[in-house]
Image (spheres, rainbow, N blue to C red):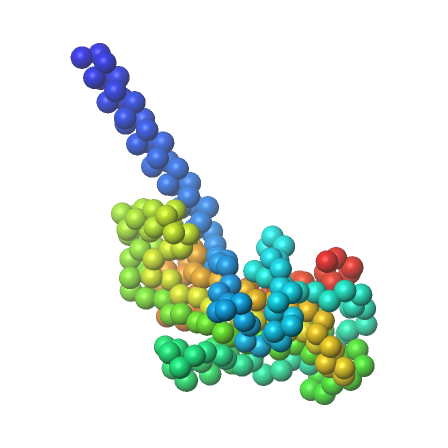
Length: 240
């Protein structure tokens, strides 16, 4: 009897530790509006980025883009103006996103990037000396399933199951997301100075549970805008 009681006690202890671990995972993961995934490049090809540059992409630093390229010996400090091209969207004939939604997403990305850049740099509409041309492209976008997303994030039992799904696959259920590319060139010569590809999906943040279907994609774009400004300032300060 003592042995059986001890085994039951140990079993309960193990279950308690597992549940405690899940609780910690929920708290930690729940702080993030987005989470990064490895970019998906069909056949190793990029959309916006020239193939010669695409072939030179390497994993980005912690907290940065998924993969990136930075040309050597670029005098970054000379670029004090930005020419931001209209955002483009790329996809195959099987793309599930409607033309209207793609237009809305490209407009959103352009506006959020322009706002962030405009806080630090002068935005111009013509090429010239000291002008950096930036081009963004959306190469993939997925909608979240709002009602199911809300249930999976808010209802305690479903939240535990969502965390188990995250532990097994690295993503939460019913989330959306987006993949995008960035190409930075000299506005006069057209020389490629930097490029990046990043893919992000919805995280486990409770604050995003009831957002609209494109909320996860927009959160990814907000992150791209922040990264763009931060990394450009790092490069200008001599940080690779």
